Length: 336
Image (cartoon, rainbow, N blue to C red; front, side):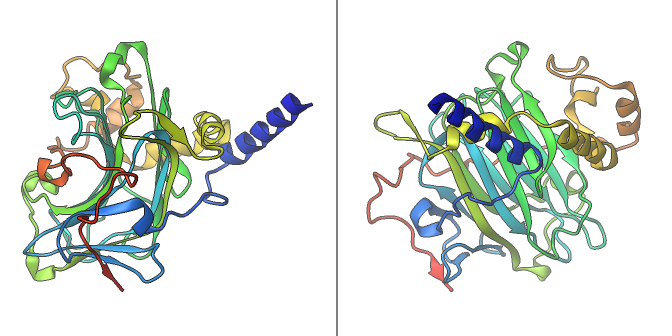
């Protein structure tokens, strides 16, 4: 009877998740409990409700914050409203990394939002690295079906030992399946969650043709509904401790239903503008996990070559501390 009950609960979770992700029943994480300012001095502002955050970029500095804990798998999400007007050269990043712990063989899972000149839309770039495979970028770029500067929209990362799925407003936009041919290139070590805004004039917009114009500063990115639903790793014991229900949640969510897969295919057909799998300038032969579709390859040939860049080393926090080992020396933030 207990086994049957557990099975029914799991099936209920699965049914609800694969029909479209929602934040219902997922805990919203208070900033002061779960995050620490990474850089930016007074450029990070926390709303008085403790659950909404504002990052700014101006002539002095960008800004960012990082989770207090490392995680080994989970569901990570934020509602984000991007800077409006002229935003060329500006990058807002919502990503996972362990570059502070594994400098030469780090893992990374990226959402990067690339600003643009006035009248042109923001673009999303997703990417993964595993075991320091930064020489093999797996970037994809796409446009959105809405204006991300007008309101908050939800961006989410699901990471398990076999899948990585990127979501925008509960719609899966990219799925990365772990294959034997990828070897160690699939992220597999504990990572922190980072959120930053910074000046990337050298490559973010039209290969660096347009840079940040501080006449339009400050550039403001707003965040709310921060979710850390996963398996936190104690930095001393090095053993993951999962939130209640997190394992079932991750296992159920990593399989995309037929209806959700259809939505993903429509999105990619209409909005994807670049995929590393079709970039013959970078890769004469597609990386082994790529599945090449001739029609998609033909469509993506009309887009210009693109330039890429990584997360600056100064945006990483040095020796990682979890909330269990923090001292009073953490950087203060401004509460609004």
